[in-house]
Image (cartoon, rainbow, N blue to C red; front, side):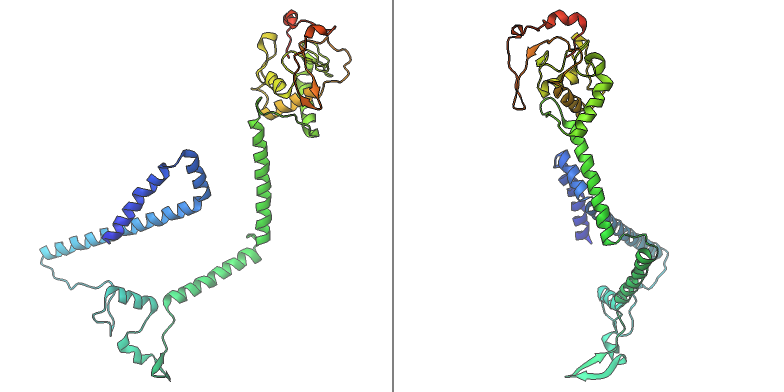
Length: 325
């Protein structure tokens, strides 16, 4: 009993130390991965500790009661926890416990259950089935009845193929959630051009609702600059367009959209604006900013002399008009 207490105390003291010795992220992932095992393990440990404490308490109460009876002069024959039957005189507690668990007949009474079958001096005994086996058999029958009703009669349980399909559906939902979460990781350092039709359509919808009032529905410009030419005030590559949308240009009247649009939506509208270059606008505004050349679909900036363009207008002169990008 003393050794058991020492082992339990060591486990209780050591388990928190093992947990706190890891980093927070590792603790969480380990717990998520082995949640059921940890809960079952802690339940077993707590149960053992509780049973041990109850046993110690009962033994203490037994000693106190014995002392009280001795003080009162009451003599009582000490009873064994497991009373001995005929043929078990002098047998220890654990041996008697084993005999009860297996319903074994004491050696002195084996003649009562002996049969006429004898081989090479070995006589066959007609012992009853062990109680632990019988109880397990009864439990398996009960489990079989409940299983049959649950799966075949009521149909509330899932068969293996149904469980597989449910897990696959859940996995697909998890993948969708994960892919959707990747959109929140987009910023000006890793943004790329979105070319999927769904992204371009989503970008157009965002542009029409928020940007067309300043830049015109066809991108020809108005209060804001023209998106259909090759001249840009703050860069014409995807990172620059994304950054301009995200942080805005307060000095020129363009607000920051990071509080109103998610990173994914800013990527979509930036991709739509990026694709406007080369479109024909109804009433295009004069070019502003610096020339930005795109070679073979790649985003490259060329610091050309803006004054070499005959239609160039100094962006500093346009500050009063509230230019955006």
